[in-house]
Image: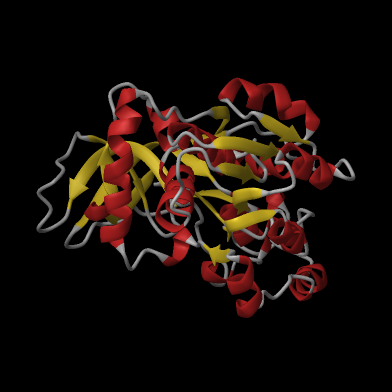
Length: 338
């Protein structure tokens, strides 16, 4: 198989394209020949050495893919060779051949090609788990989606719209027209000083009931203060700790020290909650992930959810894809194609 490996931590240029033996599926596993692979910010932080779960180099990153079943392992009956599927695994997806648990596969909806299908698993399950499972979103609630123009952000916009929420979003000004076309009603340029006050004015001083934050760092304190009573702040990333393309452990440590600690007593008095989501730590719950997949699949088939792909790159040019995301140029998902 051909794959992209992280041989050492560093800038995107460290990624190496090479050929390795095909993996063999074990009991309960399936081998898939991939047609498209999703790129996530976790892949980038892993390459930089800022993602603890990646382990030590060399390793192959990547969480999601779409492709065709090639071989099934012992005991697998839900899929068969030739089936078109979408799926996930805990790293190892930057390759033209992937082995994963049969529990983490879904049939690819006929309305989606492989590229669009590969944009679905991680982004939508992260947004769904955050907003529905953890956030318990309700119709009419005000939801603020930080970094609304990214992969998870655009998925969250569609989920919020489906649930009848009033949608607020932050993004650079150049992405505002794009996000309005998706249904974001209130947009703020996060680089503009004082956008928080404008948000308070638009909510009549009440704040919002839910905030999705992939940034982490000191901005969490600001977000907590933007919550209404019964508001929930949910963190699903720490991209503020990786502003450059090379690892800077001092910068990451300082960002960690500046991250606020939340008082349980204050949360109780304010009727506010703070929660965290890490999909990479849910692999031990394939039942939960598969259940959330199953809830979303009909909505995906019906076109309620429509994965947004900004750009594709050949697998061999994974470094260029990482640059593109870290330069904050993407509007939606970036995909690798073997």
